[in-house]
Amino acid sequence: MPPRSFFGIPERNKEREFALRRKFEGQIFRSALCFQRLTQLVLFASLRIILHTGQRRQTPCAHVSFDTLESVFLFRWASSSERSSQQLLPSLSMPQNRKEKTMTKRLPSSFMLGCLAMLTLVFMTEVQAQRPSNTLFIGLRGGATAYGGELDGTGFSFGDADSEFGWLFSDLGYGFGGEIGYQFDQHLGFAVGYLYGKYANLDRDDAANPNIPGCSGNNTPPRTGCQLNADENVSQIQAMFRYMPWPSSRLTPYIELGASVVRGQGVDAGGSDITGYGPLLGGGLDLQLGRKVSLFLEATTTFVFPDDAVDSSNPGGGTVPFGDDADYDNLNLYGGGLRFFFKGPGVNVNVMADCSSELNVGQSGSFTASSNADASQPVSYAWNFGDGTTGSGMTASHAFSAPGSYTVSVTADGPYNSDTDTCLVNVVEVTEAPTASCRVSPSRADIGQTVTVSGTITGSEPYTVSVDFGDGATASSLPATHSYSDPGTYTVTVTATNAYGSDSSTCTVTIGDSFCDEVTELNTVYFDYEMSSLSSEARSRLDENIEVLTRCPNICVVINGYADDQERDKLRLSERRADEVQAYYVANGIDESRIVARGLGEHPDSNSKEDPGPGDRNARRADSIPVDCSRLGSFN
Image 1 (cartoon, rainbow, N blue to C red):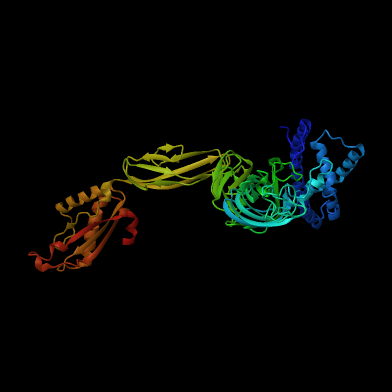
Image 2: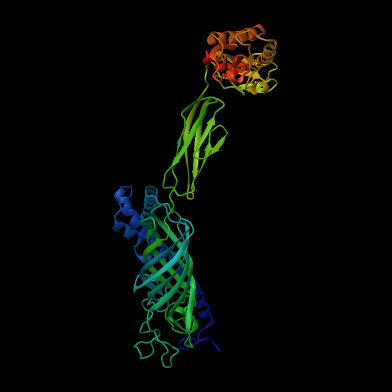
């Protein structure tokens, strides 16, 4: 059976083939032209805002008026559509005069696009912003709605494209909704939202429901109970990615790409609701009002499949034969809203370097980095000293080994940015004589014990070092070690020499043995009644004292002479006894400078009643008390 039209008239195969080709071409044309119109709308809104900024800032394009702007971007929708038709359908020729007219109108359009690029660059470089990232956000939006489909009141014609696309900005409804999403970084975010809208022409009186008996064809004049759709309500659940190419500008464009699930007026022949779905495309402008709030203006369109999900009408499916051959419907929203971010944007780190402007070769310099206190943490600091060495931390120290000018840089790395600052350090060669210092450790040592001589040498390099240990031994570097074989006090000399002079420093070391450190007392000698001469027993005891004093040159001796309570002229007798002991020490090699002899008179503990002989033998005595030679002067 041959195919039939809606009114039952047989069609020829050739006519059917032409109709299919026309339908396919029309779908392509309609999609492209719809996207072109949306692009023009967003571009027009962007240019109005940026042009206003340009007029306030007196940029080169500031003299362009808003009337000129509208005349360039909104002139004759039909002319724009015909140009698109010529590009998409090259088989349809354009008259020569129309081509000239088209080229003429491209000149002001090119000028305005140049101004747009210039003003955009000015705006973005002067107004900087930091946008939130890694945070949840919520948004509210609303605006005007537009429906494009079988019931939009337009018809498709290659010769009159504006008739087909008149629905874009006529018979507008309204819509509103909300969204919740997550901003991954300053560029990219993802949101899930709900949009409720009223879309004009969905409940047209002249659209009849063919599934109701007696309601075939159109509904003119209206017949009771035959109207196709009950109202204009459409709900959408949308999921979309949003991308901002220039997030550092307070005002930045963005694009949206996602998908929608649509519940419109669509009902199939069995009376069941039809759920639509399809891609979502859009774009807009985002203006950051505060750290957590932004205002946006946008235009979006959803391509809804199947074709009858929104309006219950699909000519290809045999329902209502209005003039739309596309296999989808469009749902547009022109509006704006607000977005609130739960976490504000991070704060960029700004670093400053503080360096020593001039250093000597080998001199250690201090380098300090500082940054803004409100910078987002954590912040790390890395130094490059310009001589192949590096450092880290807010403070660092470094010494340069060669003269010259060095550019020192510090880089601060924060969560949102990196910032670098530099400073110049001039390193000079010092021409000065050396200065030497000397230290010996330990300063008292036993025979054979190793001591270490160290010191600090400053001055121009190169220099030589010599160490004289005071016993004939030497060394040519610091630190130097040495051990002594004989007791005594030795003077160690450190000498540094360079081309500009020399300097020496001395320090002393005392060599003894551990025996001397343990000496706390010496032998006491006793005298006969009224006598000051030494007995053989007293000499023997003093000989033992002389051995100790000879072995320990750092030990000196204080001699205290006493008399008992029965002896006469006690003070003079005690002095003679002390002098007698001193004379014996000196006669046996003890230096007199190491001895102090004192007569103290009667011994404080003298008691003649306890001694059976005359007086108190224990009180007739001379005590030898060992003391450090450094303290000997206090006993004179």
